[in-house]
Amino acid sequence: MKIHDVGIAGTLESSDIIIHIEKNEGKGIEIELKSTVENQFGNQIRKVIKETLQELGVTDAIVRANDKGALDCTIRARVLTAVNRSAHSNNLPWEVK
Image (cartoon, rainbow, N blue to C red; front, side, top):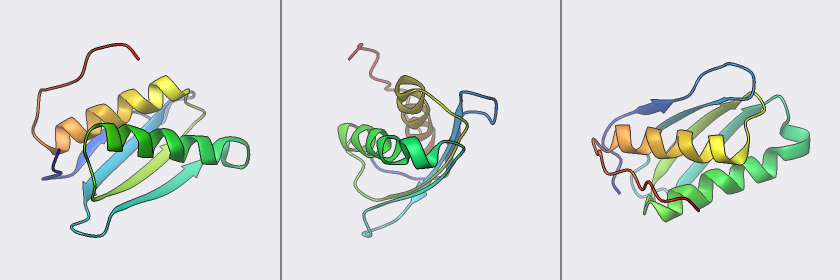
């Protein structure tokens, strides 16, 4: 999936995450994470973001994530939504993993 515009999903509420994604032509995936639980779960949050992008076929993107203690399933849902908004797509994969 190709990123066309900025896509944003999520809130700053407790147990949620805001994902902001934009183009990064030819420079790969860059993740900027700000989290209340970064010391404990920062690596896991980055892993879930990167895996979700790879599953969607996104190879070049800048992701800015502001996490307030979101679970992996919430992170995945926010990344899916932000990518689909930025790609102008309504093709969300609804299967459960």
